[in-house]
Every structure is written in C-alpha cells, then in structure tokens.
Length: 206
Image (cartoon, rainbow, N blue to C red; front, top):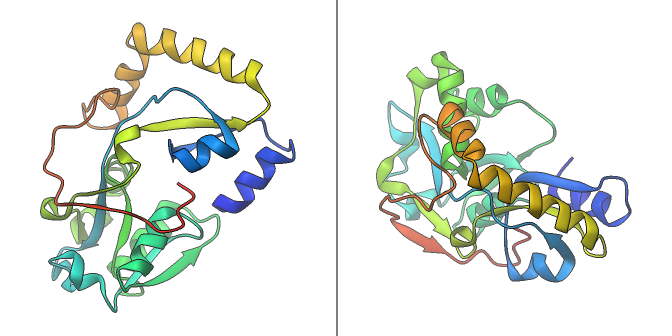
C-alpha cells in the first residue's frame, strides 16, 4: 500500500494506526493524530559502488532514475532534483537493491538507518552498493522525528500510545531495539552526523 492508500485507510477506519517512519509535520498534525517521536534519523542514498552511479553531488541526480514507493517524500524530492522516479508497489528490499546494482535504477533515497540495515541483511548487495557519507541529507521535517499516525478524532488511542511510548523510552527498550537492528545506533536521540544539505520537499505528505 502506498502513502496515499495508507492515509485513506486511516481516515476511513480500515486501520487504527500507521507506523512506517512517518515524519512529524505541521501538515500531518492538521490531518491526523500523531504520537510523540520515537525515532530521530537522517537521510541518505544508495548507489553503485563501482561508479557511485555517477552521483557525486545532489546536482548529479538530474537525469538519473530513483527507485522507491509512490507518494513518498523521497520520490517527490528526487523528481524535484531532476531525477525520474521509478515507483514500486509492495516489493521487498532485495528488488529495490538489485535494480540499482544492475542499472535499472541509479539510486534509492531513504532513511539512513533503514538503508544500512537493508545492505547489512543482503551481503551480496553490500558488495555492489554503497551509501556515500558526503551525501547525507535531511528534509524540512527530519528534525521533528518519526511518529505513529492515528485518526485525528481518536484522542483516546493517541493518549494510550503516548503513554506506552513514554514507558518504552524511559526504560530503554526502544534504545535496546535500536542498537540491535541499527548497528548500535541510538535512534531515540538526534544523530550527530554532518548533513550536507537540508531540502524543502514541495507538496510533501511526509
């Protein structure tokens, strides 16, 4: 299900919550109930190791093909920077990564921790692909962190979710889970890395 489908499912009551690294933004706060942030991150791109997909600066994205899910802020940003988005629907990480490796696409823009985890889980792809540290970036909402989305009117659920999140943050559970899956990183705190550029994504849903 793409972003717009998830938002519709929330509003019509098909689902009660949506959890998928959704950035906390003013636009979303007007449309949905949002939990307190449980994760702070930054953004990056996966490219081919042998030639870095010809992308050595953000300007080099012009004319390239980026793989991703339709409707995400990453695909919107890619198009904004002159790339051609190649959208996928309900595919696994290996499909995205193989397409970059074989040249069907040139890059994937996404959350750094998710990208590093994906490469670690697929050693064959890790040999062929890389995440350039000089191209770490952020969008206008990155600093706000990620939260859980709920229907705007469901204040009882929001209160319950925030109560449980507060417990998990205080007792270190989320920090332990983060360290286990994100190579020792603590995503409950804002990362201390050099961000090459912060972008404003136009008409972003994220």
